[in-house]
Length: 345
Figure 1: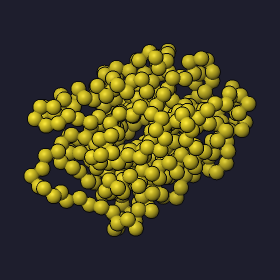
Figure 2 (figure 1 turned 135 degrees about the vertical axis):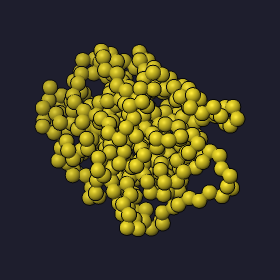
Figure 3 (figure 1 turned 180 degrees about the horizontal axis):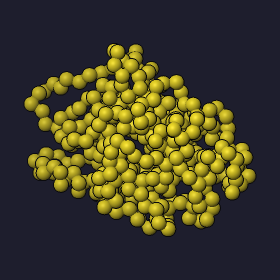
């Protein structure tokens, strides 16, 4: 469910997609596996760029690291080659390794040529530290949880404290998974830019909604802390963009964070991965030169605006879909609804 169905908060001026989710980009699928029992408050979220054979039919992609305090896996090859060839998975920091192993095993099962008659595979696993709510030392996430997240992938998916977002904090409120989309017109045809975020960043005193600070009533009841979380931002589009243009789009994602009051603290890791479903790169090709489309740079302003709006609304959506809960030390973590209605606990 998109933000507009949850609470009347105006974000930007562009048209929203049908679901107001990243899956409004045709072919993109999202799934979760949520662990929510006692000290286990964590999970895995999977994003499929398309439902087909991603290894042999790669999508063109780019990455922008804004603050590199993070342990994401797979970015070096993504930066160099400009493509994604495996599902993107999100989880907690100390579970990135086991999730990476799971993706490797799945890709080997699906592709007999990997490591045999062709090269290896580059899984992308992104993470945030959910250790204030989840007992992260418990290493609860297993390979099976990654498989469940992938098996649950579809066009409709939950937002808030689900999947990888189960134990996350955002602006000292309950954060998690959020998503939104924007539709723009090019050459008389509608295209979509969709965002999905994993929010675990920010300070309450900086939280700004519709240009106004909203956390003052709660500041006395919450201990101030450093901004040392992270925010993973994914942008998908069906617009034919080059790697250079995708990287430029990714750079605008941070505008969505800034509008809500984030300044990306020293201990916080922020990055954005962007991909287009329109430009595919075959693993094997009988052609030396591949036909690829590219948007005229003079039209990139529409893409920039769509990316900034979609990320801003996605962060808000992660907050508004989450309910308050106690952290593992018994301290109450409010929801954004608690903050906006001034209900300290």
